Image 1 (cartoon, helix red, strand yellow):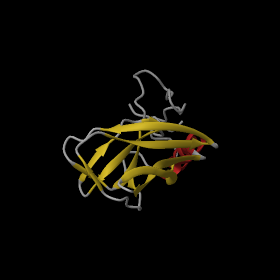
Image 2 (image 1 turned 60 degrees about the vertical axis):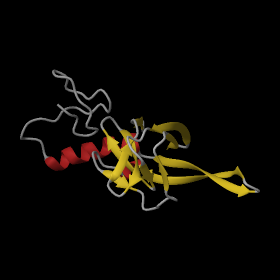
Image 3 (image 1 turned 135 degrees about the vertical axis):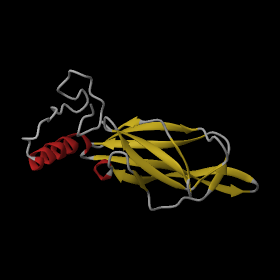
Image 4 (image 1 turned 30 degrees about the vertical axis):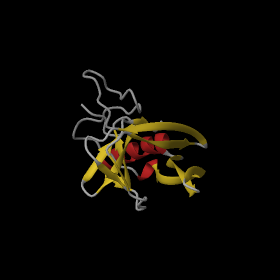
Length: 162
């Protein structure tokens, strides 16, 4: 059975989600409005004040040499904007890079002003153009980052938002 709030798999015989603490609400006598309110309260508790950021690097070419010319932090999404099993695409397109080699992105989870940095490694199975970025909320208040363009996307390992 899955938790109705965080979608985490709940072991048989358990009545409380081990991730978010939501009690399993079963039976036909549960008011749907009350149920939705409880779910939203728990989502707020865990995902409020949580933002996903992307650290990008800027480079300069001068006299045939490439040098780093600073970094920039781009806000991807506030965690409360994300929905389970839906990939939310950033409206911003990045300069297109085509690669068949492994590459990494630096994602920052900012929760209550505290940053946790994740180096996400991507292993393309074939040459991929990575111009767009998306985020998908996954069970247990975790997320996965997608990069690519068109219909060709690859996903990162999951990272925790809590």
